[in-house]
Image (cartoon, rainbow, N blue to C red; front, top):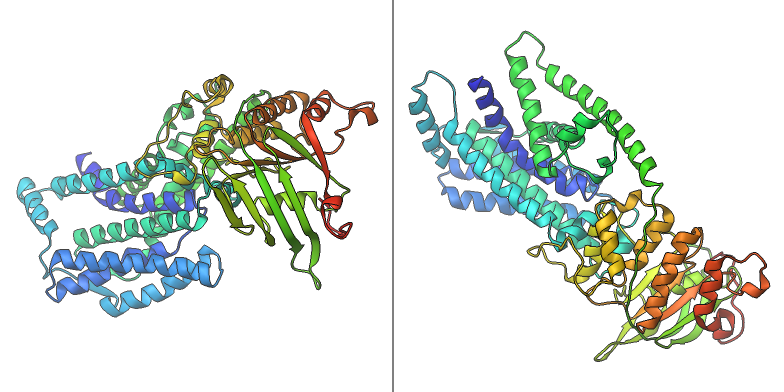
Amino acid sequence: MIAVLDSVLYEALPYSLVGFGIILTYRYLRLIDLTFAASFVVGPAIAGAMLVQGASFGFSMLVSFAAVIALAATTLTLMWLLEIEGLLAGLLTSFGGFAVALIFTQGTLSLHEVTTPLDALKAVDYSWVEGVLPLHPSQIVMFSALVLAAKLIVDWFLDSELGLAFRAMEDERSRNFLLASLGISEWSMLGIGIVCGNVLCGAAGTLVMLKEGQVTANRGFDALITVIAAYLLGRVLFERSPTRANRGALPRLFRRVAIFKPTTATLLGLLFYFLLLSLVSRTELPSSTPRLLMLAVIVASFLFSRWSDILSRWATARSNRTYLVSGRAAFEASVASVEYPGFPTPIKVIRDLNITLPPHVATQLRGANGSGKSTLLRYLAGLLPGKGIVSIPSDTTSRRRHVPDRRPFVGYVSQDAQLASSATLSVLENLALFRAGARARAWRKWRSEPNSEIPPTIKSLANRAGNELAGNLSGGQRQVLNIAGLVVRRFPPSVVLLDEPLTHLDEVNASACLDLVERLISDGHSLLIVQHELEPGRFENASESRKRLSATIGRTLDIEKLQVGGTTKGSLDD
């Protein structure tokens, strides 16, 4: 039993660093970074070649990790310059990386004539067991210390304010809009994940090189595939997830096991795989048996988790949530033109428009379908290119920016409730990300509870549904969360743009949204609202929410009359 445990820990611990890198890339960036395969062998190959040539251990390691960072930077550069997806960029980088590894190793490079710091631990282990059993206690202690340090660093980052923004990348549908609205660069998140992930893979490859006493150029892809499978197993079996909170009695045993953070779950998945490998090596079964067994367990676990999540979403859909926000703003804009590219002749939707929004007033923007109402809102939010100047007075000085710049001081909520918050973060985590915004820091842990300045209604929400994933909320509840996110920001937006905020909402959620809208108005925000049917007298069956919203409107502007030269015609609907 001791020999099995020793073998499992000795083999699995170095590869757990690759697992942490997969968490940073595949899990949160939604990117399978094939650069990992090259980093696993290129860094150790360069370090090994330098050690064989007599270079110092410290200098060899420094050059090794510099090469790994260069590989990650190459992948990012290819993604940015060539505008190709990360999978292909990583494949191209790995193609060149393996060529470099072959230059230094000629296939396999032996280090048996080189003295490394690990050799001293090997000597201690050998003398401790007197050569009777192949045990590695001191080496396992060193590997455990390194893995624990890496795990704590990754966990700390993911629990930080900046870590919330990084984890928001997991929701591919909302991440572009959400991060841009907070003034956070998506490329900075990609850079953090890809560079740190490759550094972890380079460290894992170095540990494997030191314990085996050699570097093999073709080990990279095998290591990457193995760890990805172990990560998937750990995720479905051992990882704690809010989506598993409301399951019935049947999955109770599973619920007791799935209690760990992603890093711990990945480590457990790796230990499970190497345990299978160690047990099978003591039988007459084929060497491929552990992989087939783990594949079967992964598929079965995913099927079981899928069934459990369906039950969870069904239970969550029966509840309603309410929120409350506040803020203040003022706004002016002069728009020269906005047009849609991609047609033989670009369609010009907005031209020569000037608009002023006073504080403490909700302004309705009215116009026929296709007149450019939604286009104007997306343009002012920085989501569409165009020509013009936007002036946003703050508490101190007026800020003037060209409209194509994306501005976190403009709050925008669209008809699509899935865009303005992250489905893969909980309600509390979304609110904390809104609060941190562009000033999110990796060394500052996010607060799980709203501060004293947040209205009691949001505190009540945090107590009742704080750990619920935003993706499990209904469309109406998600829209309420989106508007609630405006108030918790450390620096509230100066103007709020609402594009049909009541569309497809039931009366309960519409009323909650209107509570937030009225709070925004009373606290001095400038609001620009697009919403049809805001004249209840003309509609016998107008809902109470639309009557209430109509009562909050202080002024109405016609988008066609705002533009010099008459009406604007276009074939695109709002």
